[in-house]
Amino acid sequence: MITLGVKNLQRSKDFYQNKLGWQPLESSNESIVFFQMNGLQLALFPQESLADDAGVPAEGNGFRGFSLAHNVRSEKEVDELVAALEEKGVRVLKQPQKVFWGGYSSYIADPDDNLWEIAYNPFLPLDNAGSTSDSIH
Image (cartoon, rainbow, N blue to C red; front, side):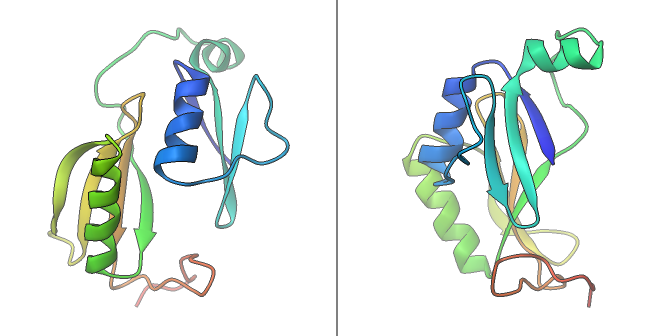
């Protein structure tokens, strides 16, 4: 499970539900939101509460030193998804383009400036469910 500390739970839920089209799980409530992803879950939890749970300060800004990725099956799919997200008002940080490692990707930001790479990786095929295979070619 990946848990993101978010500043505004409803705003972040709206982003993932209405911009990316992901449906919250029934186990979600007014304090936490869960989304099923291929093989794992994404949880949204208020930033202050997550920091308190971890015993760290909630303040902080700038690059967090990580990104999340949403892989798709083709360069065309990257282009189409990023265009659709941009039409919905999602902030695109980097337009789709070929990248140094041989793939094709773009970066968007969620409402809390978490980086999401929208990527096609020709070396990491997706199965019928959209999960990455367990071997790199």
